[in-house]
Length: 69
Image (tube, rainbow, N blue to C red):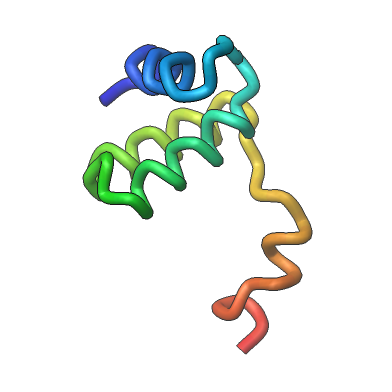
């Protein structure tokens, strides 16, 4: 799966288009959690979105069980 396919799925799901890489990363994460995309596609999408400037919000990092254990 590439970013264009992800954008299409986002558009179908949300009824609007976006180029916001953070919104697309959240959408990819949700799709992965709900088994709508596999781990390989998720990793590729995250790498590409991060290369385009997507970041994990600080509030997620602060509440992370991994980072704070």
